[in-house]
Amino acid sequence: MDQPNNLGLTGIDHLMIRVAELDRAARMFARLGFTVAPPRRQIDPAALATAAGANPATTPAPLIDNRLILFTPPADSPGANYLELMSIVDPLRMPPAVTQMLSFLLDSEGPKSIVCHTNDLDHCREAMLAAGVEIGGPVEINTGWLDPDSSELIPVRARPAAPVFGQIPFQINPYETDTLSSYQHPRWTAHPNGARHLLGLTGVTHDLAAHASYMATDVFGVDVDWRGQHEALMWFGGVFLRVVTPDGFAQRYPTLDYSRERVPPFVTAATIAVGDLDVTRRFLRTNQIRHAVTATGIGVPREYAANTLLEFVPDSP
Image 1: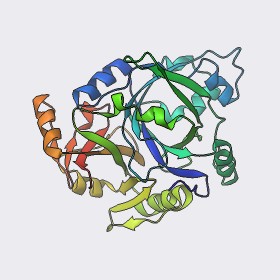
Image 2 (image 1 turned 30 degrees about the vertical axis):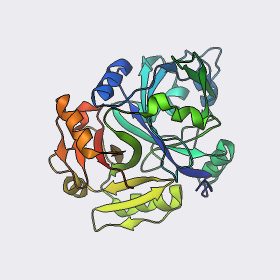
Image 3 (image 1 turned 90 degrees about the horizontal axis):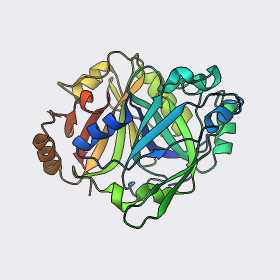
């Protein structure tokens, strides 16, 4: 399942969520029953400036940090599988070139990018440019976690790139890595709420036909399952993207809402497959987390998860 599409992408890998305060967000997701991997510095001081085409010697370095919620990928996934909590400290320090590259992260908390795995980032960038999608240079990431049991450094090497925001209905970022196993470390892929993997994402739009067709045909290279006038579903690398209208959202998530301060189209929800929905429900009740019934599971309002609606559904056998 790792054959690349026309853009060189092989599948949906993870969801990038902008958070205002990283430590607070980590506590919020821990309260929801997720194991949050320990801190690490995400990007070296010169990497962003270099990727944006600015002079790293004269460009103030924005401090960008993240924390990851790691899962064991589904069997047909070609990459990793996780939620990425991303923070920017003092974004006003960023020069215009870096601000443009990271503009998709600015303004509000919540899901900001569908990060897709590629086996060859350079080819992917060339294909996107040829398709008329302007994209920044690769950001070289070379970091890691220290395993507290063995004192072993678990390396994380990756090369993401960011298309200029606003060219694709639902923002995507391609990335490549040669340390996939590091994203599946057993210590950080076991979760008290029973979470197993990121199953899918839900985006809201006012133009279902155009935006769902674009994502399926021009970005993912997959078929669309049209589910009436208000919902479309597509699978890419073991993870789905569900695109809904506001009415479709209300049908799927009664009593829940999406971010009204953001203008569609945007991703608003993440669906997490769990081993036992009753275990998840008991955990949420114990921690006094309000939750509601959805079309296929239970949903947690976005105020508990950095403006991200979380849906928990039973994992398929």
